[in-house]
Length: 379
Ligand SMILES: Nc1ncnc2c1ncn2[C@@H]1O[C@H](COP(=O)(O)OP(=O)(O)OP(=O)(O)O)[C@@H](O)[C@H]1O
Ligand SMILES: [Mg+2]
Image (cartoon, rainbow, N blue to C red; front, side, top):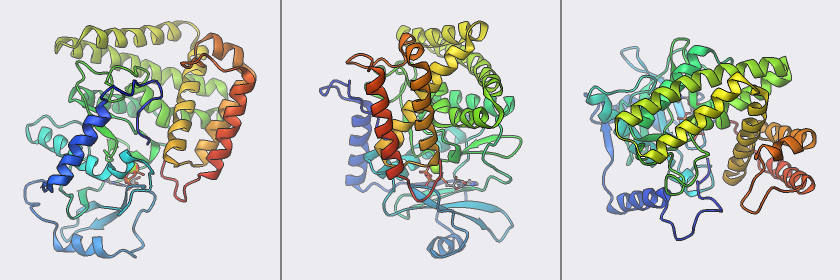
């Protein structure tokens, strides 16, 4: 994940990123201890401290860019996920370097919500968290697997959890496949390194000043980080019609979720600009579901693959999927340049690029993505 400062941001604007970074720097400078946990977990138990120190144990999952994670079975038979921060995050930007601290801050807020009886379904609880120790312990998600085939149930749970987080003032940026586990009954979120606080009644997300980049929202984040990667596989393995049907299912779930979310935001007194943005998105989806869904697929597929490619390039966290996304963009630029341009998908502050300029940029991005492949492939 990259920082969300945009070329078109006014440099004089105080962004929500700036405010968050300043607050986090102050917290680090003050040396304020950050430790919390579930009742009975005042300190890291000895068996887990020993497990954390056993750096060469074969059970470490090394795919994560922020931390190493290990499943540890405790004396009472329960299994926990022991997450130990890397001394340096492998994501090469400020948000990446702060992602463990950020995760602890967000988990503390989620923990407080749960303690008040307002816990959110699908959010993995925290047993013990300590910034000083660089550890985080949560219950192991038994039977949890990466989602291979998105079903109506798993999509609906993703949106339900995402919407509940938004209403609680938490915006999740990174719904990448490596951050989602499904145990067959529940879809779980467990990595909160790129979830940031915001005011859902006034802000759309945490980019810019909270209103300056309306293109980022819950469904867009899921589609960009995860679902269009899944659709890319569907396209190549099962054909365009199957991919379009999967997109229809996802949009139907997203539409129902956004209508409920809009009602809840309105009841809580959300500003007119926020509500208007939800209305604009839902009316586009509704029209497409009744009419030309393939046109929406092309437009949003372009947006998602382009945004994710940009994100991976900025963080220098490219994977084989980044290359496949870049190739999809190149193919579509060859095949559908005029449609993309007419639909506004190519608009930039300086105007839409010519076909030649677009292809040159994408070929260059493809080369950079090939150069910046990370050793581990978490996403
Ligand atoms: N509670 C859990 N139960 C089961 N598996 C877990 C749990 N927590 C983490 N994992 C596993 O460990 C992996 C890494 O965890 P996590 O995503 O929290 O690490 P990270 O270093 O922050 O990742 P990122 O690369 O997204 O920064 C996950 O992909 C998942 O497979
Ligand atoms: Mg992760």
